Image (cartoon, rainbow, N blue to C red):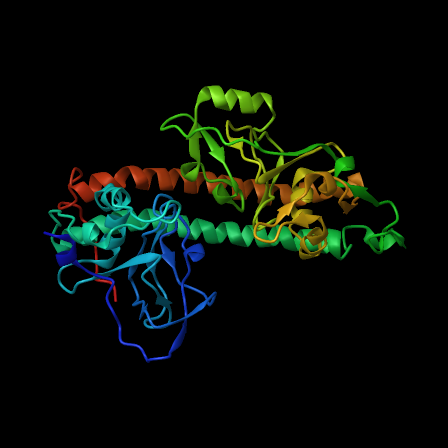
Length: 411
């Protein structure tokens, strides 16, 4: 059966002429996340609207290669799309299941032909719609589709639940940070005198310190970009960062020779480094490296290596504060691509709590942070298992016909 016989591709939904609608943009589609509900980031006229459970399939490079594929879970007819960024796949009644369709779209059966069909100017190529329409596959009957989707959805549901747990724990850590280090309501604060400083009022035994005073090293990643290889060591840029670390799956690979050269140049992340998105959306991501990892970094990522004067997690949370980002504007240059200037950044000043308060905070919040890292590791294992199962289930190499699982059609 042709893919175009199995699904509706880019279905057109009548809309009012001159209508203006919120539009789902590519930034809202996150690799590794099953669903996207949309938000008002841009409006559009014309085009078409999403229906609930549509699959959004990135058709432009590099978004397709990075796995920007998601299932739309928002309201029918509320958000729109154009034809330049996405293909939209919609289930056919009594023929295809929306969840199975999403997982099928993640498989190489459709992604490889789409990638091979890219045409247009370099850097903004698009997959050929006719190639996608004419992909042939022996699609299983609906009951089998739903069983396959049910197995894979179990992993994604666990990942989503864990992601929500991480968000709750992170909010707890942020609230405690704000209470102690912004509002100065740490244990024993009643006995401390407040004094004036160049950054406003602070407790008497605190100090205002520049980043180069509390870090043994402030640098960034490699200023040259080694050639990519099929196998080797990961090399990360800002696009590979997430709020708690590096997404290794999206990193390109470099040779061992190039990696060792970058290692000698100290462009490798090590435990307790604070990594900061330096270029583009500066300070979009800022996190502490949990353990030594063989990952090379590009110059778009700043590396702060704290000394013993400050706890790495306190430094990271400090750099995430809105007040810090507002002040950081004075250390940024470039209009098209804003970037932090390191030589000035080193002189950037923050409020440094006294050591006893930092130790008390670590005793209080450390277990919360460790729980977040532990759940992130669980999610990584869940994703790896799901990704190993997906091609075997989609191709039929793993038979699910005898599995005793309840599946129902999604409304």
